[in-house]
Image 1 (cartoon, one colour):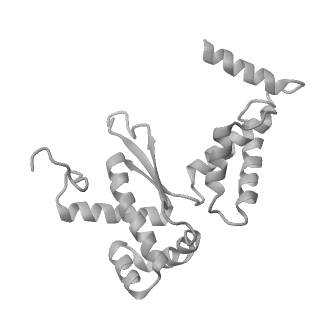
Image 2: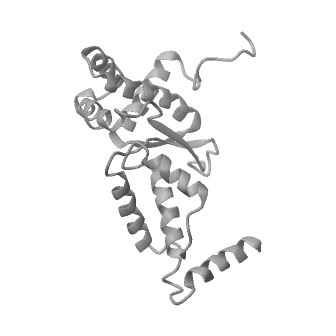
Image 3: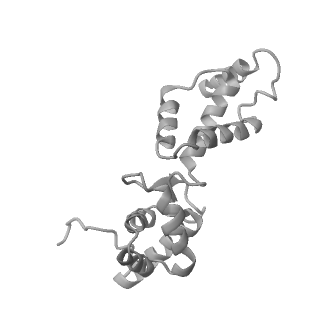
Length: 204
């Protein structure tokens, strides 16, 4: 129907080509746990990736056959899907992936770009960004704000017993990078000076 809503994005491809594209994207996602593509492709691949994790959590013969039909290299990735990824998301009720908008991939291609990633994994960008925010607050000698504390609670909710340890390790590693510039302005009140300089720059 002209002007009507569709149930999915066609991605300017016929059905077979579209399905092959999504299978390729999801195969790369399972292998690398994070991929960079266009926003529409990321949103469509996210739906298939969520379904794949649901199949892994069922962990029966039928789900293995269906997962084999989705992945292009099942002999390489099925052990990871039904092993590491299944255990990671066993207690999570849903929301196994995240789509983050990014700058366009190319100067000559200004289409909407995005990163599709598995949450709670080694390449979880929100986890790293929250750790960076906490590291900056500690370097400046100030308490974390409400938003940072809420994000910290979210990224650690389903990470198990060692979640706090992994988070604190990343905070320490990021702190050594001196992203807040405290070491460059070493001395009493260095953190306050850096923060004041940042605010004055924003005001200008």
